[in-house]
Image 1 (cartoon, rainbow, N blue to C red):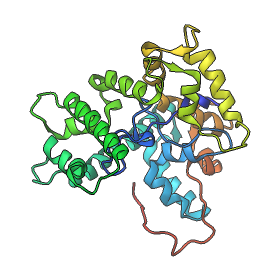
Image 2: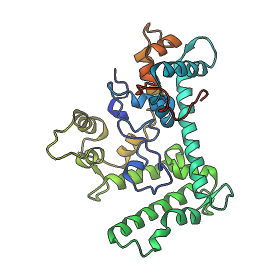
Image 3: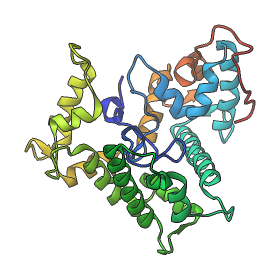
Image 4: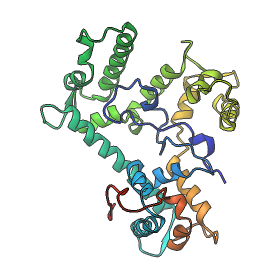
Amino acid sequence: MKLIGSLCAVVFCSFLAFCKPTQEKKDRVHHAKELSNQPHDDGNHQYDHEAFLGKEEAKTFDQLTPEESKERLGKIVDKIDSDSDGFVTLQELVAWIKHVHGRWVQEDVEKQIALCDTDHDGKVSWIEYNAQFYSHLKDEDLHDAEDKHSYKKMLARDERRFKKADKDGDMIATREEFTAFLHPEEFDYMKDLVVTETIEDMDKNGDGFVQLEEYIGDLYTPESGEPEPDWVKTEREQFKEFRDMNKDGKMDRNEISHWILPGEYDPVEAESKHLIYESDTNRDEKLTKQEILDNWNMFVGSQATNYGEDLTRKHDEL
């Protein structure tokens, strides 16, 4: 049963992998708390793996044999079962996935501060950030006018986001402010800017709205002669039935806000319900360790055929 379906197909992308400018399509904020940029469908559990483990830890599990994956999953289950009653409830699973996501955000922020904080004061000033990523705009090597124009647009966009994140206006981001800059979807005071950036990214004709073809074009670039995949057809229907709430053929700012920042929809809870539904064999709405281990491939999985040199790091404790 698809409890999340195409509502989760739109990616939660944090702003950076390594402090890249915000304009890059695949690295921009696009959905408030999405848990993975993988498609969430019944045939691909990679979304579930990244939601349950975190993106980096999911890569590690991909290197393990099934036996090793199950062993480590058992240790994780013991941690999730916070009251040690032998069952994993919805509340415990939600708490775990939120912990995993929060850990990933903090690890990402640590990496970016280490990269950008050149005076090592634990903060990132706009001057430091600008020097790290836009100093090349002054170089004569950047001859391509189109590239230069594109980077100038990125610079303006980053500066606007930095100023919004910088609550005290001193253009020096504390750790919390820099987190808001990198992950604005996590902060209420940044969410209006998230909507603005989404419109700017998708609105190709500049009318302030997102038409159906702009919506589809942002998700899918067809290959020459390639038939449109079923998931794209589903997204067309999603747009018509749910995204375009007033049925005028386009999404306005309010509809876009409802789509990417839906107050009533919690993807963490939805993913937790999905995992329980798929694994709860006796339908008591909670999971035993054995039920989880019996469905281990949904939770962690393994792509390895040989265990040994392919395993680059061990994580006995998460």
